[in-house]
Length: 115
Image 1: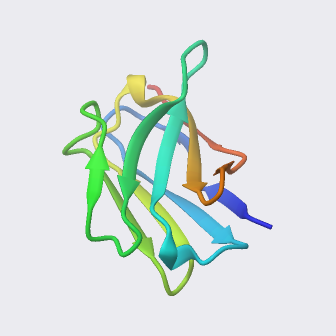
Image 2: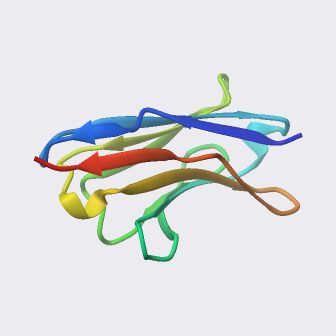
């Protein structure tokens, strides 16, 4: 079965950096686009970044463009999100997503940006 396991979240000061990872299993990772979403308390889940199955095409939410970078390693079935210049408004639970025949989500990893 499809499994997505996120890691790498934590508490960071404004201006700091974090790298999130998502370990994928149960499907042919290199055949699917992958995405990162986030959800802050009281807000809807929003798309942060997406990457095509070979990693040649990436898209970002306007709020993170120039600060976040999504990447993947198809040999390791891993998805990454490098987050730089973090802001308090980036505080949220971050989720890895794949849509095969339906949407699958990981359990999420919490990112808190605070001084």
